[in-house]
Image 1 (cartoon, rainbow, N blue to C red):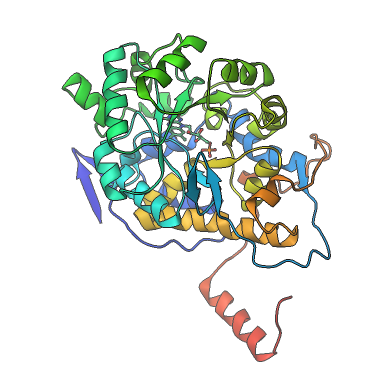
Image 2 (cartoon, protein in one colour):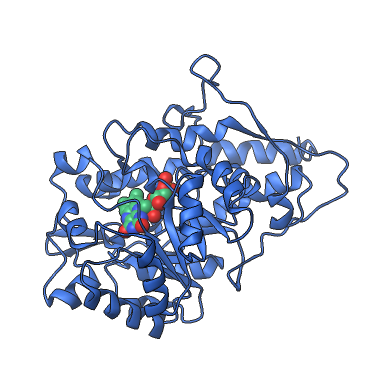
Length: 409
Ligand SMILES: Cc1cc2nc3c(=O)[nH]c(=O)nc-3n(C[C@H](O)[C@H](O)[C@H](O)COP(=O)(O)O)c2cc1C
C-alpha cells in the first residue's frame, strides 16, 4: 500500500525480505521509490568514482582462510562504548528516512533493535527523537550532529537527545557543504517530508528545502575547540565522523574526541578521494587503540565487514542498503538487511577460525593492490553476474540433493 504525504508517495511495507545479497535491493528499491528520492539515496558526487571505489577497493584486501582450527559456531556479540550489541554491523546516520517508508526512522529503529544493532539518528531525521526512542526504549542509539551556527539550536538538540537516552554523538565534519551531486540537480530534489528538528526550531517545516539550503544552516567553521564545547554542553561522548587520514585522527584525539569515525560520506562529498577502506589502515595505526574506530562507506558484504574489522574498525556502518530495505520491507526489511550481513560474516568467521568478533579484529589480511590491469572482472558491483534466481529452481535442486542423500558440497 502507498501513503501520500502531500502528494509524495511513501511505502507502508513491513515484511521480511528474501535476498541473495544486499546489492540486489538497490535495483528493487528503484521500482518502488520515486525517481528523485531513489537517486538522492543512490548517487554520489560528480563522476561517482569514489562511490564506486568504496566497494571495489575491498578487493585490495584478502581474507586468509585458516585450517585445522577446531572451531565451530562463531558468535557476533560485541561491546562498543559500554553497550552490548548482537552484531558489529550498525545503522549509519542517513537523513530523511521518510523518503523510503512512512515509518521513517521509527521503522529503522525497530528493525535495528530487533537485530540488536546500534542505530544512528541524523540531525535531518523526519521523526522526533522522542518517537524514535519510544519505538524501542532500551535499544542502543547514537545521534549524528550537524553542528548549527546557532548554539540555541545545538542546545535544543542536546537537551532532547539526553532526555531520550542517546548514548553518544557522531559529529559530522566531512559535509560542511554538500558535495556536487548531479543527480539532485537533474531531479530538482528537495526534502519532501518535514525534518523534525527544523520544524521545532523554525516553527515551520523542513520540507521543500534543497540539500544545499539545509547544509547552509549548519556550521561551516568547525575546529578542535568545538569538540570540547559539544562534549561539555551535551555531557555525551563525541566521535568525529569524517576522518580519513592520520593527521586528522591525531587532531581529533588531541581535541578530546572519544572516538574517530572513518568515512567519506558514502562517496557523496569529495569525488576522487580514496576509498574509505584504503584510508582505514593508516587511521587505525595512528589511533593505536587509544579510542574506538567506527567505519563506513561501500560495505555491501559480510566479507567487507570482516575486512574492516580486521583492518582496525570496532564497528561497521551500513548506509544505503538499509534504506533500500526500509523502502522494500519497513522495519522487518531493515532487520532482513542486517541479518544478511550477519549471515555472510558468520560464514567467513567459521572459515577463518574466528570464534568471536575480537578474533576477527586479530585476523590476518593480505594486501594486493589491484590495478586496472589485474582487477578481477567481477569485482565491480554494477557488473555483477545476473544469475537467474527463481524459487522454483531452488526447490528443485534442494529436492534433488535430498533424494540423492547429498550433504554439503
Ligand atoms: C541518502 C543519504 C543521506 C545521508 N545523510 C547523512 C546525514 O544526515 N548525516 C551524516 O553524517 N551522514 C549522512 N550520510 C552518510 C552516511 O552516514 C554514511 O557515511 C554513508 O551512507 C555510508 O556509505 P554507504 O551508503 O555506501 O554504506 C548519508 C548518506 C546517504 C546515502
